[in-house]
Length: 119
Image 1 (tube, rainbow, N blue to C red):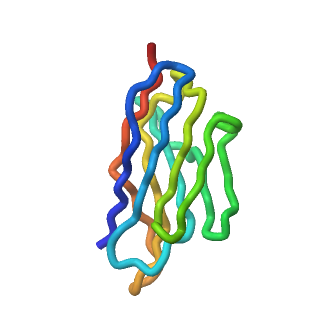
Image 2: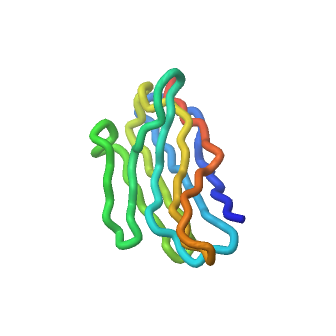
Image 3: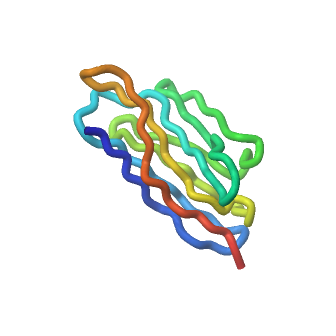
């Protein structure tokens, strides 16, 4: 059994900052790609940022320069530092991790955490 536990969401004023965390736990050997997605009401889920096991990173153009993804491999944890938040960043943010287990490599999702930027 693999669990991804997210934390750090909340409500901030536009221009504010939040830091999301996501930790993978269970019987796992290691984590490969770890990423953050978001889904706003009435919209499809979209990739926000991704970090590979060797540290390569991708950040969506819509958040480039404002959001930073990082990871602690020893803790199977990924972070998303979100600065200069805008109302359009409001969404449920989901963590995704590709996990290496005894049975093979499998993708997993967190439960989601709400992020809102509003006055």
